[in-house]
Every structure is written in C-alpha cells, then in structure tokens.
Length: 255
Ligand SMILES: [Mg+2]
Image (cartoon, rainbow, N blue to C red; front, top):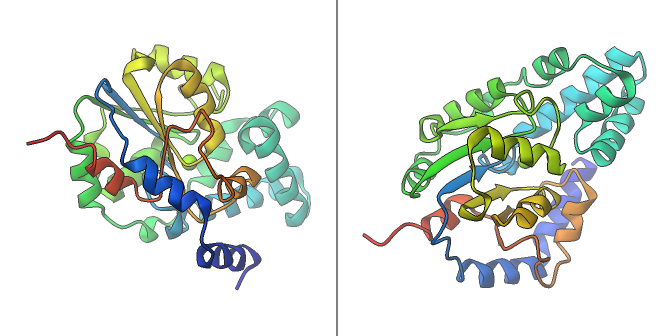
C-alpha cells in the first residue's frame, strides 16, 4: 500500500466532523436563483477514487524531470511546490522557467481513460438542472472533452472554459474567474460553482456565486486534509458533498 492510500484508508475509517457537516448542509440547498451551473472537471465531475487524476499527476512529474533534466524525486518536489505557490504546476513552470505550456498540457493529458466509467445517472442529474451548464477547468479543453465524453455527459454542457481560454491564468486567481465570467457572460449572483479544491471557491463566493465543495478522500494538497478537520463550513464553502450526483438530484425541480 502506498503512503497516500494508507493515509486515505485511515481517514476513511475514522468518523469525521466533515461528514456530519455535509449531512446537515445538504438539507438546506436552495439554488432557486441559479441560472448557470459551473463545474470544475478533475476530481469533481468524475470521482477522485477512480485515480484518473493520479495519472495526470504522475505524468506532470515525468515531464518536469525530462524538461529540466532533474531526478524524478526532485521534479515531484518542484511540481508540488509550484502547485501550492502558483495555483497550478503549469503556472509555476511558465513563471519560473518560461516554459511553453502546450507540450506540457499535451503530455500530462495523454492518459488512459479506461478507469472512467459512463455515468448515466450523473448525466440525468445534470440534464435536470434548469439553465446553462459550463465546465471550467485548469486543464485543457481537449482533456475536458475526452473525459466528459467518456462519462457520457459532454452533450449536457454549453461550453468549456479551459486554461488556454484564460490565457494560462489559473483558478484560484481572481483574474481567472474574471476571464471566465466575461468570456461566458456569466452573472455571478445567478451562478453556482462546484469544485473539489476549497480555495478555488473563495473568489466565486466573493463574486456572489453559490459554492459547493465536492470532497473526497483523495488528497494532493494540504488544504484537503484541513477539510477533514472542519467542524463548521468556512464562509466561502456554502455546501459540501461527497456525492455530486446525489447532491444534484436533491436540486431537481418538483415535477
Ligand atoms: Mg479539480
């Protein structure tokens, strides 16, 4: 068992405050004014437990090791440092090493999607939401299209806002959300943002969006371990769920 999976197993076995919070919160969903439903892709629209993003994560380390000519362990250290400091590993590589982003995106997203299962119930839950639906990702449009197509949900989305459309300015930066909002004509106060990374909900909350944290046992950022210790939700996280489909089904308009 890897160190990460051992840690996740321990956490899974322990009663967590966040579970009680999640149960309580799911009962007070309203979303009556929501006209635009905005979803992060990785570990949000597909379950983190399928470990697809772990493939991307590994390939980022491989790319950096080759690109900088450093040992893999050092590349992994840089990868995570840049992720924490700049919002994404890519942003750090561009800022610090002036790297051309396209080759990086092509390499890290060249992954085997066989672990992603079709999700017809998720598709139905998204279809039943009234209004526009967007995918907003720090990855590439190509990656988002491939994954959403494998899930069988791509057709439910009006459009995808990717890191290239945002000129490589990543979530959680305010400038990134401004670009997304302007590009897609989104009225934040009539929008909801779904994300697996809590800090990516700070700006949406400040803009007036409803925010939903889609939480899992997958951790690749210290902030995800903090979530396990929450007794109450921080102001920028309005709702939290471990089950996106189940959560969306509670929002279905009455027949
Ligand atoms: Mg994500």
